[in-house]
Image 1 (tube, helix red, strand yellow):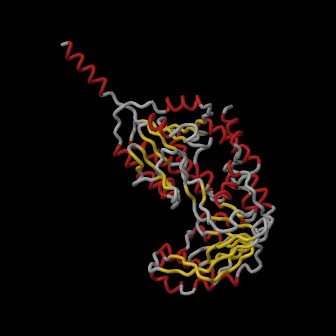
Image 2 (cartoon, rainbow, N blue to C red):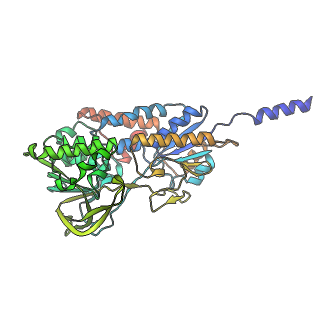
Image 3 (cartoon, helix red, strand yellow):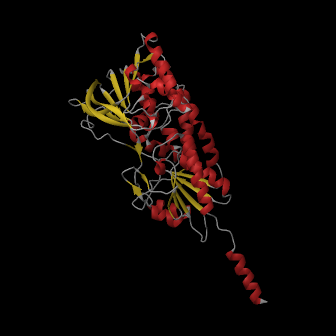
Length: 460
């Protein structure tokens, strides 16, 4: 009798359910979408989202252009996820410095890396260190309120700017440089960027692509916005489109529509907007070779490229022995982002700037999603798809066999390291102040760009 009673007690104790403790590193779209799927599938799991900054939402806050507020509506979904009782946001935590990956893996059942790509790729050509040769990523951070970029040294007292690259980031930057200031002043663009742009003398922006119009990386939406800009004309080079019409019937529908829009704009340009104040000048088949100037950039030397290969959209640009010069006082490099290895315990591909992961899996109970895993490809929708896939894999593979302390242990580490932790409720205090300040000047928000000020508001 006593033996049976003891057996039943032991069986009851060992079968008691253990709460899965999951840590997501990065509070951007990838992190929030992964969390959303996890809490939907694992009803009893606790998910803690850690971010280096005191504010959440990552690329939605710091990457999406201020004149694209509709894209930021996804924040409402993230807010709903953050409000779930099984989810916690903890900001101002520098993983790899304030707490190590080993400490996190010891404390949680599962770790998910979702901290994105925070560095930009370089061209590695002469003159890249001249003044006013600017990282496109940092320029975006400057006008979007990324604290580390608030003091970016940029001179807009120049007539012509070149943007090396033709992806959507390059298109965003071109649009910000060419948009009338009255159209920007009611957005959430930072106050310092708005002030400097209001005095900008940039009147012509060159948009340089290594390959041809049939391989252009921008989307039709981005192009349509640019060519419809008020008081701005688009100057295409007709030679760049030689033979392009012949390929139209063979192109996939999205590429066909994009090419047709370029050709339509090319046909219409001479007859429209001839007296425009600003000029957008997209050029193709050109590769940057050297930034030239004494102290600041004054000229960009370009190599004329030719394409090789069989697949129309996948052709490779090869340099020739012909060159072209473009005068410019500002050059922006927009050739892609890369991630960084925040902790030595993360398996990392330094060449490609991303975590080593197979279909989202780094190691046992260790995963990665978003740009830190895939590289900087796609838009928010593709990030969502990837995050859902990785989260689904976690739900399938998860085996919880022992209790883990989770946040209880990590918070002790952070307290010992004297880290001020910012909760989601603390972020809402910052959010409220930003919205109040924005209301005064007719903007949706006035972003706070100083981390010390953010922490001060959070601690009230």
